[in-house]
Image (cartoon, rainbow, N blue to C red):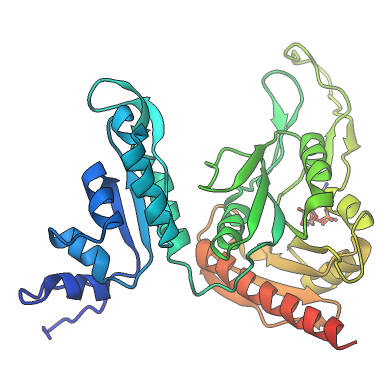
Length: 353
Ligand code: CTP
């Protein structure tokens, strides 16, 4: 061991390199994966270091193939691909586009962001299993137009909601994300992009009957302008009034339609509060028929666009121990772990009755 040992850094061992690598990796991702490598691995061949490593590792394996379109479509390659899937290997399929050979078609390496996200999903075995659960997640700001150039919105980026969607996906849930704002949609998540509170409401209402639960992290505008001017509004001389009307409360609506009983739906909200955090959160819990509210203390100026954040779960029994401060990705995972434990104990309690 050297003077500055780093547990996460792989150091080559010339004697049994493939075994060391195979043990060291948390996930093995082959990107770009060639037709030859798919063929070797599908048939248990160990012709080179990578093929040997793929046989020796116990880590999850992810393939991101890239090749000429005709090669990709060839039945032999497709059969190898299916065979690897039957071994439990994960796949991120090639996309359509211009290929290195100058042809256009299916065979282009998937987006690097998507591959990175898929590696994360494959490597997240610490999370509880939510396989088979269908979860609606709302995220991001809504935007309410005043005229073709001006709008009302808020400082939410949508990052927390998107990280929650990722953490639920990584736990095996089927996630449906309804999102406002500009952040990229995460890999493997059915995403509906919306602009206004009304559009978010319509998307959520359509999805809700088929869901097991919902985590509403969106910063939905509570008001919109009464009129949307079709042309740019010119400035006047005197005081100018903007008339606002209330938007619908999405969470409240979902709460009113919530199925209860054995196969009941669960509903989780957020409360961004700058004062009387826990009292306000408890009031929201009751009013919107929620199972839990995660309170975000925005008085510290940390919530919007900052990395580390703290969330306090509030349930009918009262406030629970805070989660964090953590970067949003880890905080989202902590939230999912906490929530899955709560759900588990709720179901155990209802089974006993
Ligand atoms: N929410 C929603 N639809 C709205 C407003 C809020 O679904 N029109 C959801 C948010 O996604 C969040 C929760 O309701 O999960 C709480 O939102 P928040 O704005 O903090 O509270 P409000 O209930 O709007 O109350 P107030 O503005 O008085 O704080």
